Length: 151
Image: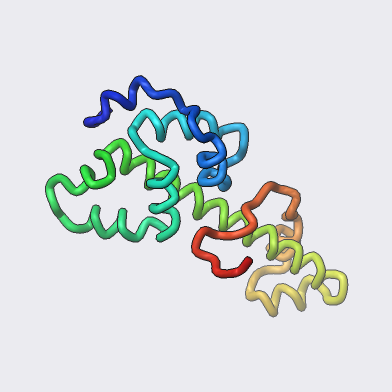
């Protein structure tokens, strides 16, 4: 596909641990399909890791450059679309993780304060406080973002 005919013959096997690590933001039940699409388009775990590590900054800057063949740097338009999808999925994962942490904090606040007080402090409606507090940390979230310096 898109300049990578040999990629059509590859199997998404190889070093699955590298793929599992770079796709840790994806639910386990979809990782094989995602990995297969990435491999079929000629992408490697290293390339995906690189794009996720800068939050898609280079991908965006290259797309915005206006150069005619800007997508070739990443393996063509299909590879770019898949890389952009991973940036989006990663951002959605981080958003869900932050929402789960917020839910835990709000639930804790409700032990000591009224929903009206919590709502006023958060700048949301009383009903929204109850909605927020329903989240939980039981989902499988990544422990650290790739650019974190914390161990």
